[in-house]
Image 1 (cartoon, rainbow, N blue to C red):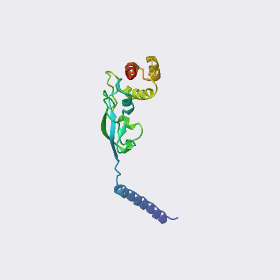
Image 2 (cartoon, rainbow, N blue to C red):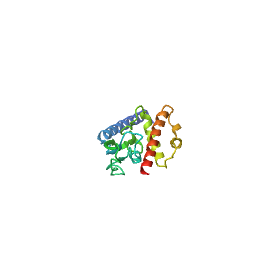
Image 3 (tube, helix red, strand yellow):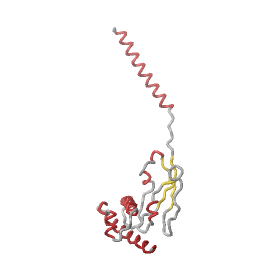
Length: 177
């Protein structure tokens, strides 16, 4: 190859690169942004407290509405002392996957001084132990709850909460007789 052919080949390569970059920039400008769908629905919310009915514990945080598998929510209130309410929310469709809706509204506890970061693990524990028969002794209830699995700085608050919860559940058992 002589120098003229090399120069023409180099010129053709530069032209191809310029043409390719021009085509890419036109494609970027003409590409339409696809809007992210917004999923709207309702979520059952209530402050976490020891005197909650079991139905409240299991429905707390439940999302429902047109964009969800469950279209209708539970009949609220669950009972005379139920504090559950249906709260509307909207989240981007990209954020809807198992566990992400826990962050829609932060879970709170009605007990003074209860750490907010211990609320969700406590709710998960309540759901697990409320699905089983109630142990008659407080020690059995606390063992079932695995209080030692909570962070050391939260154990005392969780233990107090669970003591009040066990007393409440026993009173319900006696009242229903």
